[in-house]
Image: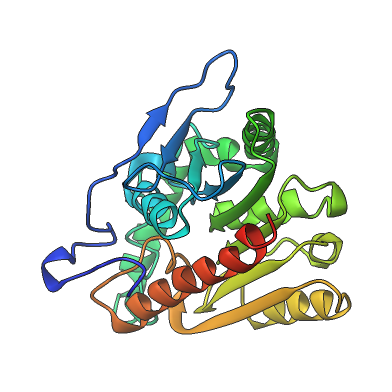
Length: 281
């Protein structure tokens, strides 16, 4: 069964079909970071002390995708899934649509003038939000979200992150054995450097795009070289053919390669968490 049931009538832009089934839990004195909470459809979990944390991309909860993906993970893994709102003031969801391809070559026929104008417009719209995307803003909230779950009795935490969220996981897991996460799935992150990669001591699974403007072949090679030096740490790396940055979170479901990459990345993540989060809990 595919990760997310999708039919021709469901294909609309890069928004996933369906309606979120979980609940939004606001920030309180006891819970400093607001979050979306997903459970299995029947409410029954296989392990009440194990949870998955989903770190969304730079556009936050502005589109339903992270909630819908969290719902699917909750149902398939039969555990609680939390999506912390670690970027409380994200850019508008469509602010990069004019410059970010949803499949390789989508903008190949765009004129140079149109390209310049689109980039200029995107920069103007993003500038007010840049500070809120930097490590100094997002990492404290991401860390607090995990710490809060530990306080609530979730002894075993795994995480999956997309784009900005993937980079967050790299930072959280680069704390070595002190990491609050026992495993992580990292989807098309920004490159963070060999020092951080080499500090990871728990299992990770990486899903990279074959055509990523930021994570190109040299960055992929650097990642491989860093993890190969630590043969005792489980690391799985997949480069998905004919995909671009964002394919695992905001796929263009009308494009077969993007759709296939989305399904495989998230299906592989299910298998990974069953093995490294649930079976070892």
